[in-house]
Image 1 (tube, rainbow, N blue to C red):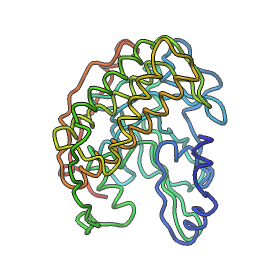
Image 2 (cartoon, helix red, strand yellow; image 1 turned 90 degrees about the vertical axis):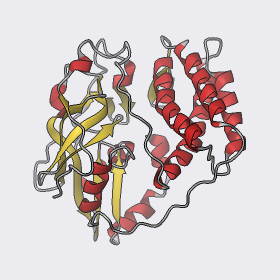
Image 3 (cartoon, rainbow, N blue to C red; image 1 turned 120 degrees about the horizontal axis):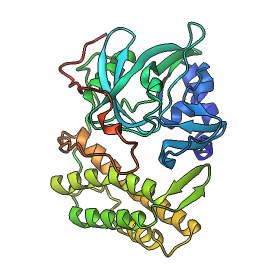
Length: 329
């Protein structure tokens, strides 16, 4: 969080919003900017929950933030729209004490494919605020726990567009289709990522602190799991690294060298930093390809890993909605 706070000229961003801009802050951004609109956070605790995986909580500037679920959740807007969007550690907001901030959407449970990390805290997703907003000067700020922008949830896109004052079908600036490169091959990238994931699994029972977060191999492997399907999709579409392919193999080489049982925490940090930068290159290419019209990769529901609480997979579910089924506000 401290790195995110230092990454941008937030005074300049605030001045732009106060001058009439619309700001959407998601996940970590929502935690960071909650004071702008006086939003409270409900998923906090004085100490880490007992007998829970470390991926279920994170150190933050004000203590411990707990993450009840990871994956797609069901949402209901204040005007009756229903849609889904994924949560990857985003906030659960406290109930406002006055008219502001406005609750734009609430959590309504999970969908199939989500994994309960804290199965004993279902109340965190039982009608609690998920998206809130408030005016900031002449502009406005919208804070969201779920990732409304995720490309696999078009109904959430439509709802957010309406919240921002756009109608579905409004012309967007065209995104040119990325041109496939020749090196490296997509299959090689997938193989390298799988190798990094395997090395991370080898230290799954070891934890270390990086800044304000506690990491372990299982967490790093989960990070790789989120990137590998996108890399596979790029391999099918034709590799499109947007001019950064040369450095990608070097980054994955560094991740392979640094992540593993024979290294030390400071070396693991270097490996994860290299993996994160490689993921940024991959996801830039992936999302550019999606914007250019490439289809989403096939969804396969898997049983949760061994760190999921017993019975988590059988938690109450809601059927995901498509953009054709979403109700407009």
